[in-house]
Image 1 (cartoon, helix red, strand yellow):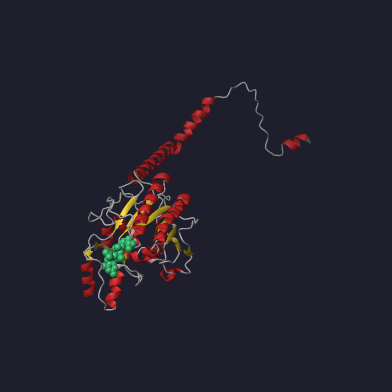
Image 2: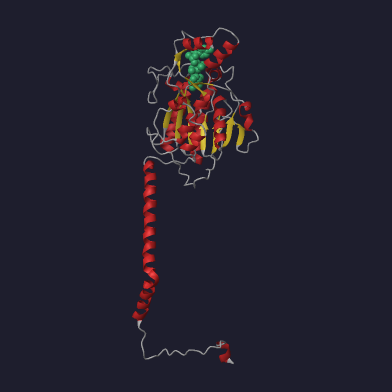
Length: 381
Ligand SMILES: O=c1ccn([C@@H]2O[C@H](COP(=O)(O)OP(=O)(O)O[C@H]3OC[C@@H](O)[C@H](O)[C@H]3O)[C@@H](O)[C@H]2O)c(=O)[nH]1
């Protein structure tokens, strides 16, 4: 009974004697293994496999070294390559190309991990303060067209819902009525901070509110950038140069600003905003870009904007004489809004050589006319 339970097979059991007088020969198994390897050219195939593997490793490491050579100074978190930018018509004209004075270093790559060819990158979550304004709404158009998700924050002081109405219903678009002077918490990858009245007529209307927007508003948005690790772009102004003593103004020029003038709420406000951006960059490691915007014109500009282009256009249309303030010898550089919005997009994307993580960019055409000449040209048109 007991034997039936332990053996159910029908083959005769081999009886091996563990105490066999003949000892096992261990070298026998070694020679058997060698013979096995040598049979059917197995050894040759093994070496071939090792060689191919080593070759692959060498090729991969050489290739990635070549790529990394562009990364010497730079670390990016963007989700866009330069070809994305070009394809989305960001560099769309000779004029736009002329705007970028600083030369970018070679690296345009992203650090969002390698994405297989043919797969599109995920859009970024971007907040645009002042996104319902003249310049802001054009920027929002570009970002939405590029595939990003955009949150517009605007208090509608000079902005208008109509400027972004065509995005209503788009799941990648949100509009929040909010004054940046109050703190705001959002989870975003990038912040384009445009919120501030820009026309002298508007910013002089409530100068205390203007400087508060520039100082407290920028502080709030920089705080947000620091908290969520977002890259931050400040739209500054040519007015940081005040009444410049140097022409044309290069980014390194410090300006000639009256701290107690009627334009100081804006000039000094933007200068303080730049200072705050730099301090957050140096002190808290926030990735900061500053774009100094010059006089801009184009669609969605209010007819009562108060700036020279809208004034001249409105007066010319009404066949009224054009009002030239002062002696008309003052000069300005102008740019079309669609050219301008390329700049913040490029600034936030590129890493420039000038400083490690920060670039200040002057956004204007490289030629200028006096107000007298402009009024003459408008008169002809
Ligand atoms: O009807 C007008 C309006 C303006 N001007 C003159 O035209 C020049 C341009 O004035 P604008 O009011 O258009 O504005 P500014 O160029 O001074 O500043 C503008 O450009 C830079 C932006 O960053 C500022 O936000 C914006 O206000 C000034 O010298 C002004 O005195 C006129 O001669 N007639």
